[in-house]
Image 1 (cartoon, rainbow, N blue to C red):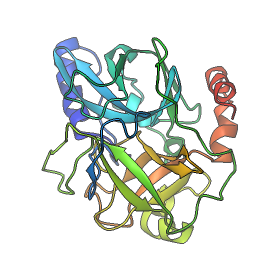
Image 2: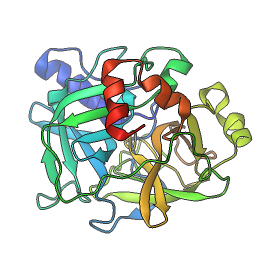
Image 3: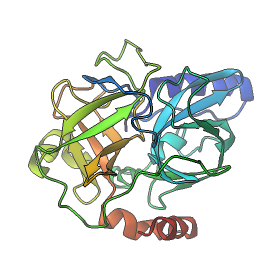
Length: 290
């Protein structure tokens, strides 16, 4: 999955500071980057896109992106809340900022803490390719967000939006260049428009890592999400309403060098049917009307 290298570095620091099993990164770490080939986001344009900072001692680093799907609930990638193997990152380590565009600014957004994280019941961080495909988690905040409308999701099973060539936006604070050794994580949120690809194209590039029942893929040469963008939304306007179609999941470490990246499909029947296989997952389904 696309996981932030910063998160891995922070994990090492956490082990020293807190003497606990520290968070790490996936072997297929995906999108923790600023969006390759994109541009700056105007302040306030996408207030539902949420910054997840990871605090270790006196240090805070970019962890992942997320989206506001309920006034007190975020949706992100499940791999974002894990360290190595099956070790979960403590909820208390997260510093959430909703409605922020410039993460270096003290005058934007609403700060929140995480009181509970709920991972898809079929997801296994150190599991099989199939188990890693259920890459979605929900973070319950300490108090509701005010004045910001949550992004909406497509109806379960709806595929009318999934047309090869149609474009959607991916936004975040991830790495801006494809070179893995250049750690250029911006303070200002960036965005890029990426085209959806056909099932045949996705399979050709990603092989069995692409599960058509759970994933979509999108992107183009030099237009992609990247390291640090994991968990963030793939979205577009639908009849004047912002709607989220994907969650940044996985892709090449040299971002933008193929057809793009993999996203968890937020309209997937399989994703939501199996979400109810745990009491917490069932509660999330009910909350979101899935």
